[in-house]
Amino acid sequence: MIKHLLLISSTKELIKESFWLYALVITFYLLFFVAIGSFLNVLIYRLPKKMSIIKKSSHCPLCGYKIKWYENIPIFSYLFLRGRCHHCQEKINIRYVIVEVLGLLVAIVSLIRFDLSYTSIIVTLLLEVFIAIFFIDKDELIIPDSLNIAVAVLGLLSIIMADITSLNHEYTIDYSDKFLSLLVNIIIIGIFYIIQKIIRKPVIGGGDLKLFLGIGLFMGWQLEILGLVIACIIGAGVELIFSKKLNRKIVPFGPYLVIGFTISLFFGPDLILWYLHLFQ
Image (spheres, helix red, strand yellow):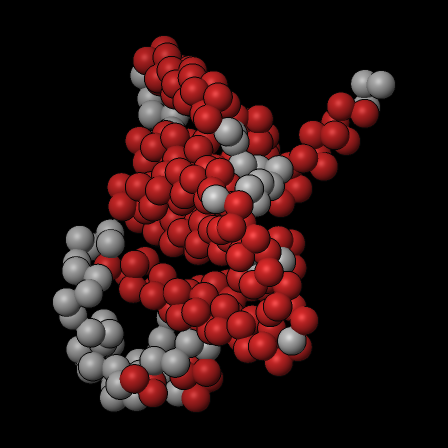
């Protein structure tokens, strides 16, 4: 174990000492997550329709034209094609390039916040999944189980990697806190269930509740509750301000949860300290 930790530490220092090697690693890091961002568009389009995400190649949803590899380069292809299908000239939904840009931005932000580490990789993957959840729930009012499972797996992976490498961060929970986090999740789910029984109306979707369980493994119960509070505040504000324009009976809560958890993930400890200082 000690040899393994020394090897990791020396490898990181070696990479940082060589500017060009460090730049090359960062470039591959960003290119990898740009590709992941592009793949998110496949998930966003196909998962709600229960389509295979690997069997059929990328194609125009209108004319069925199979998109060539050079027409599928993240961000650049949209600009090169001027936002239109090469075959039928149908406008390409701008959401595609927005998702790809977001996929790149979350990688950059995680890299700045956590440096080049296991934490930055896991956090970026989590945020990439968040992007897919945001757009799917916004459009389809569902959060696919596969995405909630991905969040849970990343949560477990963050605990395991922190234990193996000793690269703990302020969001990693230990094994003793994991039980408490699970207990808090059960209480939160129970509260929502009781409220729904009392008012006889759905308060929150099943996918949202499953998301709690997964994110609790990653952040722990304190930051999870903070993320929920932030989500409720933002959600209530947006829905009240734009209620007439949105004009919807069912509110997709997933996007607000994603925003709340992301804010809590990056700024949670500082927000909690700020709040506690108010009472001193």
